[in-house]
Image 1 (spheres, rainbow, N blue to C red):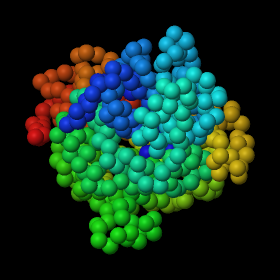
Image 2: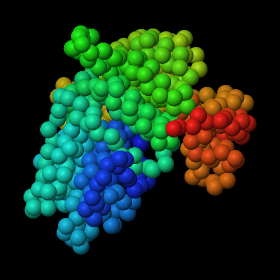
Image 3: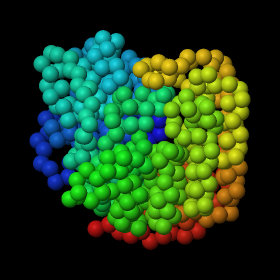
Image 4: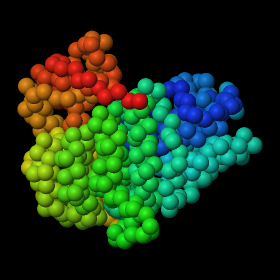
Length: 486
């Protein structure tokens, strides 16, 4: 999962719904849960774990926050703006809390982990503060609040916390889904708060991952994204140095895990997020190249095009190393879309160092990029070691330059795809017109096309006829017969 990528959607906007725990008999307690999630894909995945835990306690989920008995906000701390957005959202509940004193409001996730008890003092209406490894304790925390106490649990774990929990899918008839394979991060990038909010890196049992993917396919899903702060460092029954922990058990690295998941069905499309350039191996690239159902798409965050800035960021690679990985991707997977993350205005960044990022952008030609101004985060190495000394107006100017160039680059790449035929997984009706449907191609680009004799979760072949800066437009030339799940 990228340090700086954001979805900026709430679950009720995109993935919420009445949830059912399969093969489990639960006595409803008559209370309704409203879940809202901000930030990265891992937060959306975690919210499904939260839903599973609380539905197991008798709660039902609701789309309407006004009828909820408990409101939980799953938060992001990657930038200051992310936390400000949550604080603003919390103000919406103040009057509601006055009218309904029994309403429970909880803050989950990275912001909860970072601020801990301070959050209860700063946001008086908040009743529960629970970090990413504390969701099993939510039923007990709720009991504490119902007894008149504020409740906090932000203990981080060194083990995989939710391996045996089957996440409740909050969209009922979904197309795509997230599957967490690792938690935490050991990289300690100087700008990033994630290691402090999500703890040390640990990997999940590959058999539980396979079973979850298999169950998703049986339930109608046709695309899964394997999630981790750094998926390339996934390792089961191995230390970080590659030593075997238990000789009686098999080991699994990320390339081997992808091979396993690819066997669920050739009709299950597989993505992953996020890779780290220092750990992206040729073995992973060769697995992608050898499996038609693993998407030819890699998100490879660079953050800066200058080696000295990368050193200050503690990224663990140089400009030259990054370009080496780009060359390997294009050699092993010729038709691979590559996207990235870029931070402008990091501590001490000079104009010359900024120009190196511009030149890298021109040299690589990413299909898309998440681009941000540097935002200093408390307790990070950058806060302790460096001064946030690039003026905001300079950060903004550099960011605008990068955005303009990347937008032009992405548009040029899409224009080059006009006339091509792309395999697209249909996701639903277009938000802009009832007469059109949309989906995503192998490269994770949205494709829009007229409605026809096909529906959500079908694969169609689309001839690209036009494009915008963000979207491909085309017409369906073939409907593929999907492989039916059992």
